[in-house]
Length: 497
Image (cartoon, rainbow, N blue to C red; front, side, top):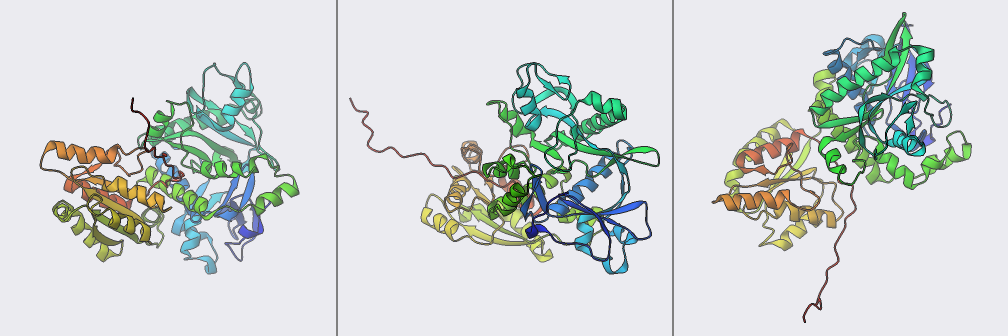
């Protein structure tokens, strides 16, 4: 039985009989529809088989929308059998009158076909990391779920081909790896074949967006004599997402890249020792439930979930809910500051200002314009960063040696405001040298704290400023969760001979 801490034990549905409570989802019977189930994705989050005592705002919405996105997208390429019946506004057709027309329920709930579920988790891996890499390291010769692997793999290594690495589905305690052969002996070849086919298809579509799916989990069930995919497909709860460029850079020091999923919370939970706690023991469950998850960890996680959804769908969550799920929901108003280095830069910012004014009238953005020179008025830039409040994103542009975006980012980090993304714009100069100087001063900031375009370059000129502002309004941003680091100054060095 799943233990839910009281701090996150809340009911989304009244007047329906609940059949099952999972770590994240609650499942209900639907009166008049005995072959279907009503599943609601909560904002609960589980790590190492424990449910934490905090919620991640909008997490359930992202899981439901991502599940819908992948099923609709994959069905355009392959007519596979699955359990999803209705989502978004269409769930009203199955609900009692008092629950119809509820946008909050439509965002996070779905009607699914009732399946006789298999008692194992079907895991497909294209890269070696997580528990798969741990098992690889612990065996000699190296072996994972019956697959014999060669020497030389490191954390995050790409496998020569995708592997089927199933696990048990424990009611209490941690899941355990089982051999692919044992699953085949009991259930035949279909679970492995279908898992690898669907994984390879999704991985190919994901790579087109610059995202790698390192591994994913499927669940299977039977209905009317047919094997079907159930539960969730390729959500950030069931899959490990990596940015492709980050993965390529990670190969230089053989590390696992930053995960765009709930791995961020797993890593924090490990610092509290939650990974060493047994979910079957009451005292360990009580310990985990009492652990305080800091607000910044919760906010970073929320933004990671929204970011990976945007990267995969090219839409903000609310826009997808409205256009693809038929839900009456409005996107959040974006508070945007546009900063230029001098009044002469306003000419190149004009198209962006006109666009922002149009969007302001629709209620999508609340823009502000500032002129601050980081060279001539460094104290003004420092004061701006120190006093800054209620701003979601900043677009900062300057010409020549355009240190403004990088300097502003440094001040924001100094004042603990590295949650505010800064998009860098290099304005064109009178010469090619000055134009390239502006570009390099943005692109070559150590650690790349300034947001670049989709190709990893600075936005340039009037068109670049316009695109940067559009990105600020329409896009999501990966939170910068790094600690502020400094390099000690060294004064009066004795180098004279």
